[in-house]
Length: 237
Image 1 (tube, helix red, strand yellow):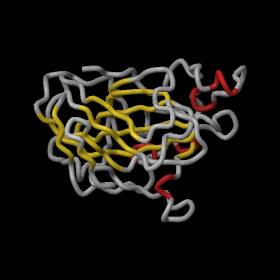
Image 2 (image 1 turned 180 degrees about the vertical axis):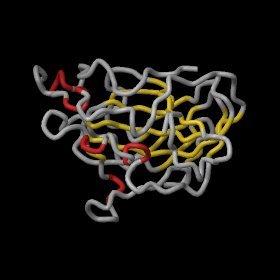
Image 3 (image 1 turned 30 degrees about the vertical axis):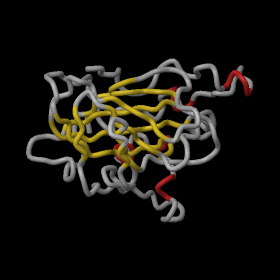
């Protein structure tokens, strides 16, 4: 799965797990049902009822699980959104661990749809990023589809990387994929592209950073703890 990176933000610190389960459109104040446009997954590691809040651990970042999460199945519908508009991805509680938040776009190839495409191949690109703590304690994160994004169907992959355990057992990855169709798009060429699996390496130092060295409880939430994020540079359109 090759994608273009859209956004990277730094996220919050609260002790709990979470997952991206629903989408809303801020422009129209529309909230859609859980899993209507996001591919549902279940790791079956613990209780099946709560397994859709369990992270992918660092040991699996080179496996197919990192694409859209474990046992991901197609969503029933594909969301139409205009290029240049904003969409929000929501979690039931809050993004509750420190680490970067990223979004990727993967163009659905000819002959496939967002519903039946598995997301394989080199088609993914990252579409935004920042360093800091702008999502501390939030239950919703928003992304703007670049205005020059070509019209068509895409998988929109959102990932938060929890680094609270990175120094000992490695990072935790919270991943979901939305099915979207971009309308009114432009002539941009998203890139550079990457693939999932393929974008990450088990030994990437970002996945093993020690967040707590030289930081106390006050500075911990004010200072950036990584100077780069894994994966490609972002595409801004």
